Image (cartoon, rainbow over all chains, first blue to last red; front, side, top):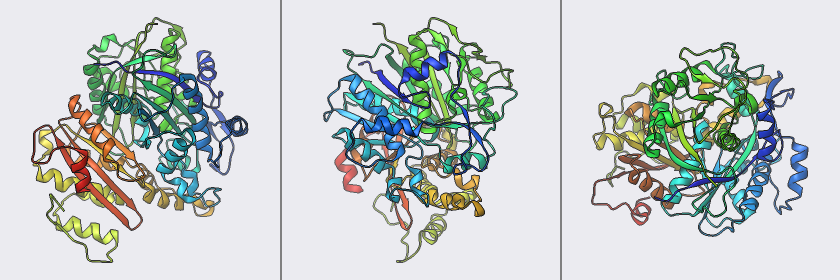
Length: 382
Length: 187
């Protein structure tokens, strides 16, 4: 079976407009979460990580796009443009495009929106990105709650294996909007401090925004230095509840087992876990139970939500990209915000950034609708 | 319709709300959680329930049936409803029970809970029905042993326009081959 890789990547975030800008700050344990006071988003101030819209305009103008675009489209196009040019891939019938998002241009539903309400259709978002770059095939827009970003890498791999494409570009993103902020707040899940995943002193989640992109390819000839091979991946439903995770971690356990089986490796072969860690008690507890059932309680683990907040449809891809850089640098990044253990089972949370030889990492995510996705990545030896 | 046979026909001019209520009664679906669902979930749930019952899928067997759904309007029908509840700061009443349905994949969660499907899920949005992607993706799930069967199709609700088209892909040979042409001819 042919090997498939994750290669060139980009992150447009409040750290800056490339992956390195984010990775360099994360290495130094510096968060991008800030106190936001914006009445249009929420009456009270809250912690979030927002892309600098003025700088975005500036950079986007440089792309000389002919069409009018929404903020999210600008973030996505800017992010993807950097990946496409770094990869030097010429777009043909054999080049796919996946858009990973939960809410897309949901701000187009607002009363005083500058956009046509039709922009809220996710296929319109897909078309805007497709048209900008001249992709020949219709994009696959994936909207599968908070697992979308990881699931997108799995779908790209599967479609390449089915010989539909040689390479697939994924771009993921969601905005911080009144829609999402009020929604999570209605669940009483929003924190008024920077989030503290797995901590006894946790105060709930933060919502953040990024656009993250990556190239998935079977072509080994021009891989990025931090490229990884996808060894295996799996998705499983909890079949339990639509808005709360399973108490037993059933779906997460099954998704990891599916990925391990395909990768043909053991739990003990995993050097590092990039977990979901939203900093809600139900999620964190579910993960701790699942990783114990999987006998991964000693494997170093972090949540990156303390750096970006929860970036919804982008989070899984964003965190996969950070994981790739972590492995390339042979460095475990601290699980920011963690102090005292706040889950009932032992897990090995990375307390401070440290050097370690890394070869294989596991990325997991869980979301509304009871979905769980796991993917296992191996460093490519150059 | 199930395998070409009409199960329930709504009177003309009937609203979606009335149609789905009558269909639920006529199909003898007994599931109290049904009434808490949004329109997209109700439609997907009923469609899946009819098909899976016919195929003798019972929760006790915990069959590995993947769900691969697609549509055009995502969860916009409920998104609009939720947006109305937060539009005006003087009249601000966001409800978590509505917010949770502002994701299209929730309907697959509802089906998974009812039929105890601990399986692969993915929800795609296309401009129009796109059998090429559904075909390749479900074929891959079966070939790579990620699923024994795939419940696949299109479930769309956009105000008063609604469509559900679901089909089951299996490993065993049936009289209908799994091809893009066959899928298209039945849509």
